[in-house]
Image (cartoon, rainbow, N blue to C red; front, side, top):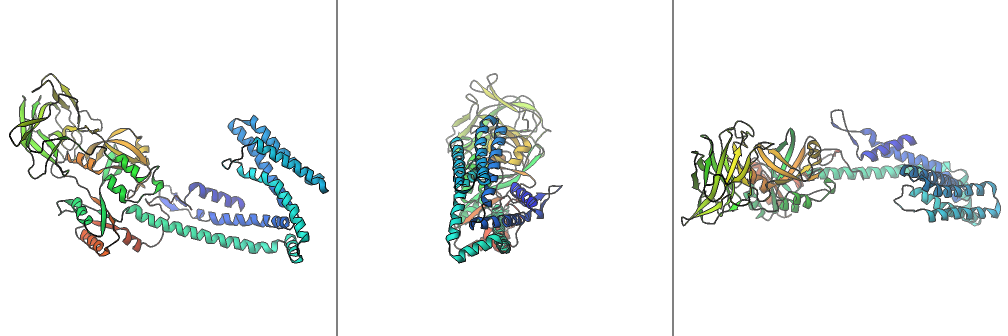
Length: 611
């Protein structure tokens, strides 16, 4: 029973869970491990049944058997452990001296109680004390030592003998009721053992039940918080609201019930054939309102959000405030009858819009231009220059026409009719080719061979691959890649690590990213079947919308923090969201409705903390 109980409890402590995986990785409760603490209590009780008589005889001054046991275990454990540790560490020669001192102390104890009688025993006790003092001066006793418990036992040998002699004297001179009671218990201890054993089991079982109940209650609450890390979580895209979830957040935060909110975008992503969940967030806003547990990562939520935040939120080349139209000079080196040239601009509100400048056209240098969108608010930023060739909008490789196009003098026309050159390709190149495959073959460089004006022009050479029917160049002055944090599972499956750049397929868009961190878990993301990736919302959507033709990609999740006031307004918000087919999770309502308990971690995996 002692061996079985010890093994089961050791396994429970090693696994730190009561859930195991089956043959097909299905999570199942291992009922055997539930008996681990109970078996351990029984083991403790059995040890108590053996030690209780020794303890009573020691207290009653009848027998020093308890001291004999303490000495034997301490000397054998400390001497053997010292030699074994020295053998493992390669310092066996240094372990001989402390082991010899311990054995000398044990020998002095044996001689004292085996051959010496009367007051001469104190000479043996003095020899033991000298051995203990020698060990203290030659060794380094510290709580971090593996043999610390054995060292404490060695230090207690001499005081235990002195205490035994004092107890023997006290028992003889104590009142009759105390002396007789102690003698009776010492000579027949088993009749009291069962009562004490019952008290131990009942107390231990009560503590176990309370601990497990608290653990399961906490588990259930954290499952709710993992699924809804803020007070409210709204999922979906409103079909009949032009401003989307962004406009809804502005409206809700203006009410007495909602304090603040953060937008998010959830979709799927691929690196090769490795699939994962992708969650893009507003780093600062989300960090201020979201729940996060310390063991999800080696760092806190604010630091994780800092890893994905784009240091410079400004992208593109800023145009003058009174810009009316935009154009450029273009020279294709091959005939491209189905290809059009676009520019991608972003207004002051962050709205990204594609402006078509017409067909690529004739082989010589010629101008392509168009008016800037009148329904957007300036000043505008020039984000990209792209070449559109009709094809499947989700196509990311093959099927296109290869070629080379020269660009020069990207300009804007101002309200007074004058022109301002935004990019002449004369200085340092801040542009980068838009990825069209996982191993991008498109190239951009500047050349002095055939400029339209000035000394150089931009030369863009492309292959057959396209990114959603688009090729081109984009402003990479801020780095050209989007910082992301990935899960441990993705890192192990792909071999990626912090500092490595990679092309990722995000819902059909090829996006350049740089790994900035690796974590274990993150709220709302289930790691049971796939890993995940975190990104900056504005940076990701801006990049994806550079390749969008008919519609823009918008946030599809909204996280809200309540003020704690006006619950009626919260109910109205919930009803309004449900009426337009949006999913609403409210932690208050979830806690109210939750029943039962489950042995799971917040993300659906095995529970990993046993108080």
